[in-house]
Length: 287
Image (tube, rainbow, N blue to C red; front, side):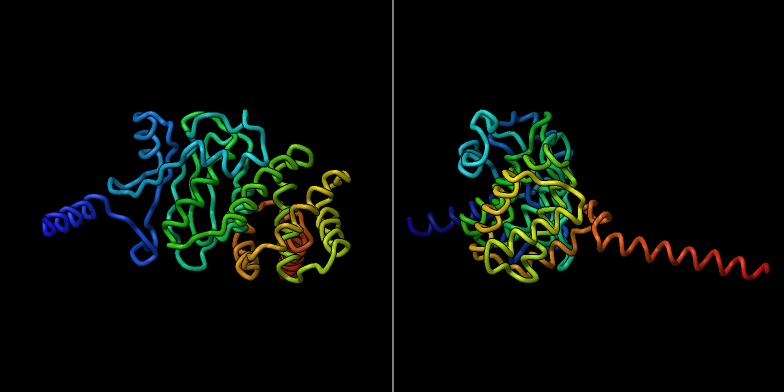
């Protein structure tokens, strides 16, 4: 009987393989699917993702969506069905995070990148999709869940909550100051915190004000207070700020508003001067 149970266990393991950090390599994919998708929708999404036949699938429930989003948006917005899905493909070490979306109408690619960096996700290509147009707030739950499995790493619950709060608050701020402005503002403040953690509220407020000034956006007092509350929570969490800084640096090509920041403008000015020099050099050949 004992021998039979051992053989049965071995058979089950071979039928349902699992992945961990030890056997997931560059190019490997893990997929998250909403629990309430129809079989046809699941099949269509897997084909859309280009998922291999033996891809590992993680199911995301509506209960999990409410668990991580219930504090930040109305229950009616979360709904009663889990349908948003994603594919996470392991990238090479140091590649950073890249996000692409389809049928996501509220949360932008940049917002996902920011929130995922806060959660500790790194070096992955992420595709987020749904069979119909959705806000996209629920997708982060599945991505983090899948990343924990693929990286064989447990992300603390308070960090998961912070990542979800960041995504929602950035999307709300985007309604006021524009999506790209909001994502760039959050990224710039995190980058400054990573460089030199503020010692008090006055220093934190100064960082937020400077970031807003750099991006030429105006924040209401209510928006400033919301950001102060959020970043104070973030500072108190056990977050690897060196990794945050590194991943933000690699993601700057996705946070397109970067080109309008001081650093981005400096790059453009150097490019402009180069072309002026080149034109002058060409002119001199004919003078």
